[in-house]
Image 1 (cartoon, chains in turn purple, red):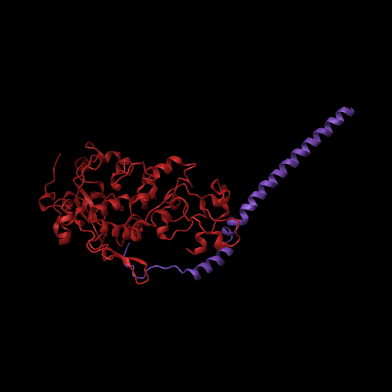
Image 2 (tube, each protein chain N blue to C red; image 1 turned 45 degrees about the vertical axis):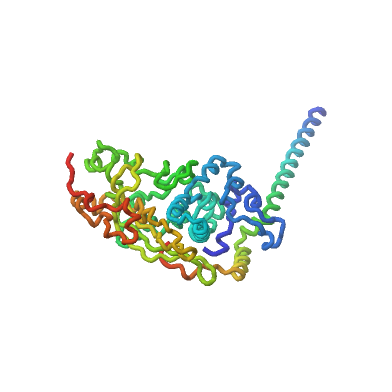
Length: 73
Length: 368
């Protein structure tokens, strides 16, 4: 009886470890993604930020096209 | 399209396979730098041009290898034609190379400029928030470049001329006929788009129309003599007198003298097994002997080596057209054919191979 109870507790521990391992690994993966997001992606998915920067760029380098272009290209 | 929209990445892209690749792997730059200006130093806007081996080749090796021969990437026919027209003088060639670099060679595509963003030549911009599109959309990625002539013909934007039946009735798109094999190239360096082996052919679908034994008598009589567009297309656009240069601020410009609609049947200058026709539709292209005068006077000394009226396949196909209503609507109809009077005196010599002498305008109608 005691032996059976001991086995049951052992299985429970294994399960707990598996779950903990899974969540820790998953947590790690999400950290990697967040790190990636923190640089290029976080800015390029943020329209508000991009609008702000694009206004600065347009002031610095307004689009220039020759006014002498005429006719169909 | 606003500047910010051009570079706005959608979350949807991040869920895709390509979205798992770190941005820096393809575009470079420094993702650890919090200053956007310095972080973008060395960034490659289109990592697929001129060489897509690094960005795409690792997974799509075969396509990338062949892609270098794609006319959309190499623009080889432009180089070949200008090479023939140019003076052999080395300094002249150099000046023409410079001019073409400034004005002509920017009109190319790449893996990215078909499958991710609009082409650079129309100011670029992500189409679906950087999501890779297996099939490039017609409006953003084909007709954004091929707009002035082909789109207007195909969709019926030329005044009084209906759109192509394949588009209007069947809603076919460019890729319905122009398949990936043609777009991606097959490794051969074609000097003309008409030579591309995997290019579309009407008989791929309309098989019966290309046989002597066709159910339609008229096809049986004409299938080797006239190209399909001679009977089945309407008026299309002709352009004249393109000149390029740089303005007082150093910005490149082009100017074309005139554009007009018209329909002209010329002689086929290069009869091949695939294109055995005697008569084809011809279009005046915007080139001009003084095209590069800004860079070098009389640079195109051998301008006459290549016709200015070029074989064309107008994209406004109809079952019934004014010229195919009856035999008499085409035979003896001098005004449909490109005769000497239609060609400017200074361009006649160069167009000898396509001008139809009056004696060759079909008169009699044969009976089987």
